[in-house]
Image (cartoon, rainbow, N blue to C red; front, top):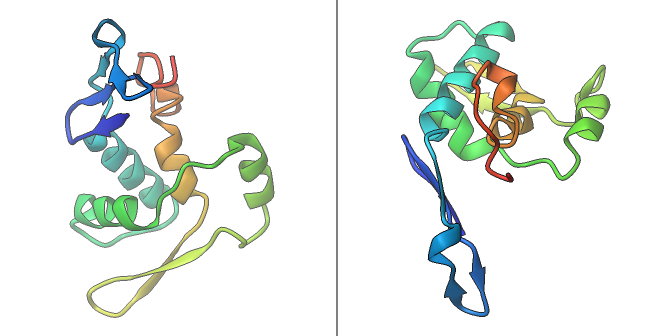
Length: 123
C-alpha cells in the first residue's frame, strides 16, 4: 500500500492480508514536492497565472497519472499532442497540459528529476 500525503509518503508491504512492520518505508518525498515540481514545469511551459501552486495542485490531483513506460511516453510526447488535456482556469482561459501529466508523478520514482537527493519509492 502506498500512502502519500502532503509531507510524508509511507509504503507498507502486504502479503496475503498481513503487513510486514519491519519492511515499512517512510519518505519525506511527498505531495508538496510534486506540487512544487508541477508549478516549475507549468512555468517552463508558459503558464503565467497566479497562484501557481493552487493550479499546480489541482492539475496534479486531477490530470496526472503514472506512465507504465516513462521513457517511451517521453519519446512519444516529443512533437506530438497525444498526451494533451485541457485545463480550464476560473476565468475561462484554457491551458493545455501534456507530458507534465506523467512527468510530475515520476518524481516519486526519480527524485533527481527536480534535484532532490533521496531514493525513489520503488527502492
